[in-house]
Each structure stands twice: as C-alpha cells, then as structure tokens.
Length: 196
Image (cartoon, rainbow, N blue to C red; front, side, top):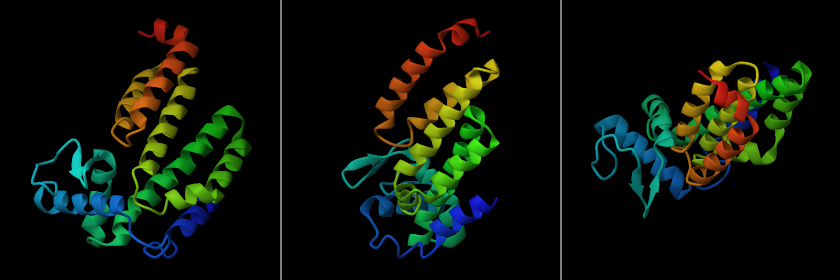
C-alpha cells in the first residue's frame, strides 16, 4: 500500500503543469469525453461512436469513455483530462505486482511494483492524457491472465475478452495483440486445444 501511495503522489503532484503544455491528443480526448458526458455525442455530433474522428485521425474509444467520469466530477480541465492516465498507471503497478508474484514470489511482486512506481518513462506517460497508458494497462492485464491460464483454464475466456478490448485502446495494439495471440496459442497450444 505504501508503494501505491508513492505512485499516486509521484503522478498527481502538479498534474496540470507537469509536463508543461497541453497536447492535441489530450485536448481531443478530454473534449470528446466532455461532449459525450453533456450531449451523448462526439465533437461531430455522432452519438456514442466506436471510434472518434478528431484532428484528422481517429481516437480509440476506451481512453475517451474512461475520461468521462473524471470530466463529470471535475469539469473540462487539464487536470480531469489527465486523471484517467493516473488511474491506468496505478492499475499497471498493481498488475505488475501480481505478475511478479505469479512468476516469482510475493517479494518479486513487490520489487516489480516498486520498479514500475519509479520508472521515469512510466511516470511520464501516467501524467499525460494519451492513449498509450490505457493500452499498457490492458496489455498488462492480458499478460497476467495468460500466466494464470497455465494453472486454471477458466482464465481462457477472460484472456480473449481482454485481448479484444485491448484493440480499442491504441492504434499499434491492432498489430501487437495479434502477434501476442499467435505466440500465446503457440506456447499454450495444449491448454487451448483441451479447453472445454
């Protein structure tokens, strides 16, 4: 719990000011979350879209819909637009603890969580409202569930659901998820074949 307190403190401190500037992607995610909350439509007037057209490209739905509760609570601000990143950054730390515990021991999990808490790049991406941190959290969950499959086949369905959701977090996930799935099916083929 002390690790999570440290993680939260490192990520929440001066959140609107650091990093300086407010990026176009953050603006798009925050504003679309606001329009979904207030009107049920995106910035182009499309009700509850699967993908959000914005600034000449398309944003994925999970980061935007995840931002809606924070915009609802704190209004349309830089702070609220970045809060979902802290949420997912904290989830990553919890998942890395669980992964480390599964692969090593409780102490291994604690060391994994502490390393994730203090990694500069992970702190950085946990403080800005980009899609990447959402993808990292969902992918970490996929990895955790895959590790659990070896001991319990009941995790196979959650594994496929989490992989499907990961595709809706970040553009590169569309490639990485299928490569990850191919590797998982290859390595754990006996478990998947015997699943009933």
